[in-house]
Length: 610
Ligand code: AGP
Image (cartoon, rainbow, N blue to C red; front, side, top):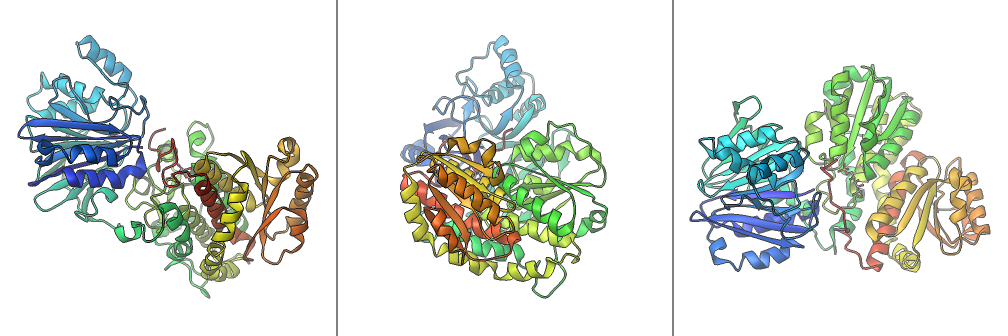
């Protein structure tokens, strides 16, 4: 996913542009660029690599430093390799139009052929480059840039957030949104546009979220918004940003990943605050108030999500089925949208997404729009697309999660799913009171695992030489095994698989030998004995074993090479303590291998392309 920032001011914009791009790097960071206009003259500077490299070049360009209008972009390549030519901003051949774009133009090939037949020359491999040429094409017949810009938007299919400059109107930034996030910041004698709040929070908390099919013209004195599909003017609805930069700050942690893992106890508290109270048999989920009546008639729940959010959904499946007695089916959002399955008005879809911008998950929601299905969201990013296109939902309140690997968001999502399961049970489950009481003391149990960070670091260093891992568990431990394997994969680039422990004999056991460690999650449960027999099968084949068990389980030592103990807790809340240990293990292994833990190679924080 790419990051966009634009500023039109009465003073130099380059430094705030670069700072804004740096705060967006978590969205994608294989190249970056800025285009500014100084006295009608454009300056377009692009660099492969981190924004830091761009910063060094731009801030040494005096012409650029005097510019009071500009747009910038950090890229996560979708079409075309990460090269300077493919970096944004892209321009028309006469260098009068400059465009940055987040999303995918699905019909770019047809547009490119049409424009080449009109004599246009392309220099990049990107889909984005069609946009400045298409605007140029319409400028030949339209009276104003805004009209040509709107004509071009009408031709584009797919997903986009766009910001554009035109050297003949050097006081205006033209922006538009379809399915990719874009918000406008209202400042004092300057206005901003950005992909998300982190890029402008230092300047303003007054924002306007653009909706699909809305375009806007920004000057340093005005913001005018239009719906370019309905051709209607939109009165901007300014909102106060709920984004605390302090929370996003690193503090004394070496990187965001470790900070966010150590945020986990607070994350449970924030996700429970005002919702769960010991001694009370009511779960207060304000975000579901407006659909309370509809929820009474729900007899089936489908959960759609991607990656770590999907694994949180798998925990949610066990929780809702066991506590609320409702059938739940969890599906990968990228598969869900292609299935032809029956829905009814008594089905609810729960979309889980930290960013609230994941294209596959958005597509899953849009798929059920005409079925009368109740659409709910479990989202962390406030004001994000998913939070706006669902009927209701529950925010995670985990605060900004900036590291690409999702950790505290998983903790928040599972906490919220526990609350939803308890709420749907209407207090009738025998697990209700024990779980409400356990949630109130869980943060301290997670703190005690964080206190094992040094021991886990030693363990991770010991196992950092291996090239293959398998994580396994049963019941609530199975989604944890999947999550542990994903974290190890995405942070260390090592091959790791998550498996249901009962499946080991159906194939994976063939892989086991002295070079293939198994991470067994065998916390106290009714299935621990069965998992112990899996451990013996692995031991018999010489496979190294790390076991993650509940405190007090002394017998496990004789079966395994290493053990991580986690505090005893209810089976239903074990994922919250187990995940923290797994996150620490993956973190320390990645650090031992010298990986960039906040920006793993090839990945982006939020995947806004399908
Ligand atoms: C998790 O560590 C990964 N970064 C990735 O799998 C992520 O969970 C997935 O892309 C879903 O993102 P979302 O929660 O923002 O929708």
